[in-house]
Amino acid sequence: MPKIIARTGDDAVAEAMRQINPDVVAAYPITPQTEIVQFFSDFVANGKVKTELLCPESEHSAMSACIGASAAGGRVMTATSSQGLAYMWELVYIAASYRLPIVMPVVNRALSGPINIHCDHSDSMGARDSGWVQIFSENIQEAYDNTIQAVRIAEHANLLLPVIVTLDGFIISHAMEQFEILDDDTVQKFVGEYKPEYSLLDAKHPITYGPLQLFDYYMEQKKQQHEVIKSASSVVLQIASEFEKISKRKYELFEEYRMDDADIGIVVLGSASGTAKTVADKLREQGLRAGVLKIRLFRPFPAAELANSLSHLKALAVLDRSDTFGGLGGPVFEEVCASLYNYQFPDGHKIPAVNYIYGLGGRDVTLDHIEKVYRDLEGISRTGKINNLIQYLGVRE
Amino acid sequence: MQDLVEIRWHGRGGQGAVTAAKIFAEAALAEGKYIQAFPEYGPERMGAPIKAFDRLSNKPLSLHSQVYYPNVVVVIDPTLIQTANITEGLADDGLLIINSPKNPSEIRSELNLKSGKVYTVDATKISLEVLGRFMPNTPMLGALVKATGLVSVEKVLEEIRGKFAGKLKEELIQGNLNAVKRAFDEVKGE
Image (cartoon, rainbow over all chains, first blue to last red; front, side):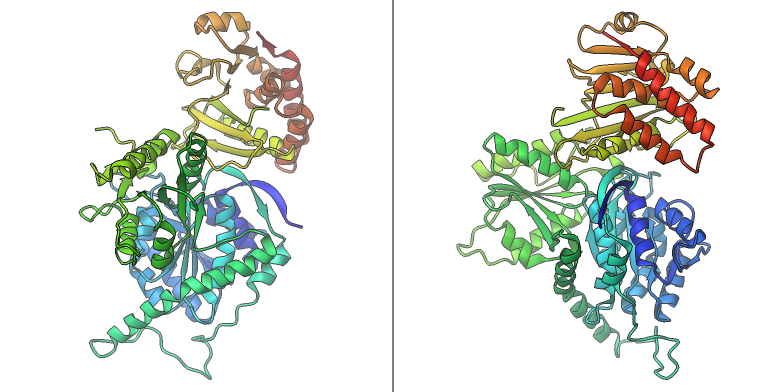
């Protein structure tokens, strides 16, 4: 029977890893690592899993070890955060281009400098174009559920791609909430045994990883990466529907919260989605038709589906927990704008869209901040006029 | 219980404020509430002033901001009464629960507090007598349970036993349970 228990986000993800029981976990065991690997190493030491745990000298080497183990045909996981992910950067791209189904929970935390340890999406946004599937989690339940689903998504025969599952640093990783943990058996049956299609150790079917490809073939390979990750949306939905059968919890590409009849909407990802829902509920009581669209699948970006879901709004705001420094607002804003630009509105109209950069380096996002966004949107929906395209929420001027 | 109750704990690093906040939340969960328990996110240093928070609700909690307007404030370390702005954001009908040998009325006049309810219990003395050392978090749990009635004292005792079984010596577990019970009996409010 599934049980309701209280755990921190790190603890819950470590429990998911215990139930998945991967063949190899390689991780660098010093900050900016998180407690995920620390808790998991207890399971290894106590014989609760059969995993081989490697603790190399850096994140760069940790991902290298993951690549080797995965290419050899193992089910492989790691976890990281912040500078750790940044330090993996070269290998993160290589893992995706080798089509290795590695699963990596990322606790979203800010990048230096200045030195900061708190929540921010800059770290995984830095890996946004690396070819990994990226799934964002709002709370502890989602972080747990997404970690389990990620294994099946990554290893899907049509996909074979690495997957990042995110959870917000400290706000989710170090906070305790209740969540429903599935039975070990149920999870083990769901993830099943990993039967790798390709393995470096399979001497009868020799394969090559990491050859030199210059102007002759490199571009064809990159086009193939684009094609394959585009197909991830349908895999994500298929695995979500299988997961619903064992958990009774429904997952999609994004969650529409009170969006059906909304006039104004906020697009957001991560834990701030929950805070936005709380504000939408309150404003609904006051007669304001407010909605929230929470993005779950950020890579591949569900552009057409998302634009369709937003198409009836009178005004919309995108909340970004990272910046692009010199781009047009935050990375999510850019994606949403591009999606809307290419959407065929029947009457050719345009939805006014604005961007708020919020929560950098752990700056708290409060109910008042979100309410201000909705109030701004209400004004824009009435007048059609945008005074500030990009604003910083809760910043001291 | 009202739909949402928010609790702020003031303590110093190493005094168990975060642990107490978690135990309280787990007891509330066992009694059917939706819960969150989290520290004020910062580098944790022994002896530095820290805060921890609980959220309890009858409905699923989606809010993930920090707590600004607590219904209840628990002060584990008496030296923080004058230094930590413990009444900040506290609701007019809020409860202030303080580790102090003083009467609630003395604290009330020291803080110039006109509204709400003030509770005091000498958690330091209880801790020293029962545990033989300064661990005021568990007695403050007892005081919180009595003052708020949000969860039963039995459930809190059960959670403490469950949390520390196999980790602390039996006599230390028993001491913590006794500390909760004594503070539950001795806390005074007005």
